[in-house]
Image (cartoon, rainbow, N blue to C red; front, side):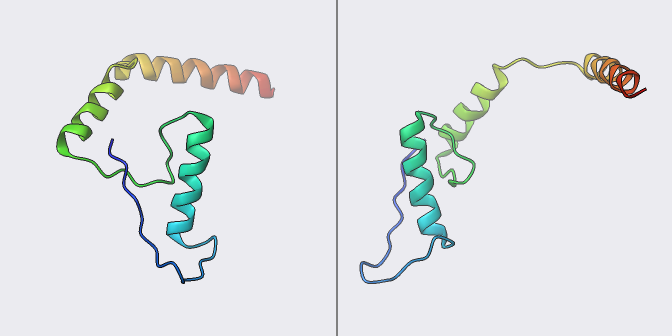
Length: 84
């Protein structure tokens, strides 16, 4: 992922609701937590960076629709039983 900077005029007053301030604050919070992903910061990248991002996601655990439906039905039965 590339690091983009947001340019703001030096003499412009900014409030916290403005996107540039939110992105700057989000970057500061991300840097301190060690987590490189932040949903409040836009992701600008090359096509290769996007594909790399998708491939990392695909390396995770996936379920077939049948497995997911079965797990959901089990969860639903347990939930309804606990409410009675």
